[in-house]
Length: 512
Image (cartoon, rainbow, N blue to C red; front, side, top):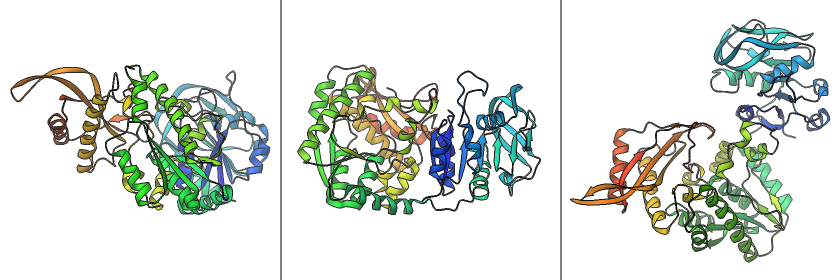
């Protein structure tokens, strides 16, 4: 059984980050609800347990509380921020409102000998985010670090292996936080380094073969990272028992449909069923300008087209999806967790429950960076594995206003120029997202001594870690000049190019 660390989620926006940091230590981690029973935890046989932070107060009405029996499971436990306060509160300590709230950068002094801080300097810069603070330690605990605002910035009961941190070691604002997590995972919990993508691939292939047997599998292939890696992994396991269905909704980027067919059909020799539904989607989108209506129409139409396609593909027992761990986490998040709402405006709707398939989701335990590593090890091209995020509704939500064949052509050509220039500048794979947006306005211009009245293209380039927040990228002026010149010269119907210099928040990454 794979060694693992379990994280109980109390609503912190950083819970996923904790899980990722543990996996960077080459140890498997999974997130469960805050109220998971001690019996269930014990049955999973984790090497350690982490209690996440959260926005609540331990004394607040409806504050999330853990099963009190978890303290007796017999494994090391680390409480972070709210998790530390909850631990202290439930074990007989006292938490109270702080005279000063601590939000942002702070410095802690390590005052006691603790394996949490092994091989670390006595003064550490950290990231605080709390209003309440610990005022009295439970029996058996000692303080091992203090800050300007609290004498209990870190606490420990070494006999029971219970530890607490008032700050957040998982965020990049705590420079040596990864070392603290590594000290907990390896030094205190005794975990090895067994979670690698090679070991995952070997195990996943064996599990897919056992699950599928001699049955057939259908997978909806979009050309995006998740579905592409899922297709490659399943094909590695069962070969021609897999049929990939690729639906062209007419809202894809230039040459994308041809590229998917080339890579998966001709190069990797997968069974690929190509469904060109361009006319169906564009007919249903005719005259629609409201972004939410666009998304719903695209979602419903995709389901209809995909259902017909699966019937054409023949009898199959399994439907494969590129579900990843962040999708799974959303189903266990507590009410009010801000992380649960991040992706909502990117989705176009799932498949209906009445489709008679068993689900096969081989990537459901992986984060995006792990999915990319699997794709690389399986030999998928860089253009697919490291492609930038692309919205489910495609170019429809990058055309502000009505979607028409002509407006799609304009945006597709402008988008092609943006991608081409970013690759030439060696920036495409270094930036989170770069794309063009077609605005619903026209402006006056002069081209060839003649007056024009044509479209405006906006360029959006943002840097981000996870899409939750983003800042606009300061692209070099010479690159911006090339983008403007090429788009206006090469894309018929455009006479002006603008740059979007807004961050998220208050703006979003996509315009619709």
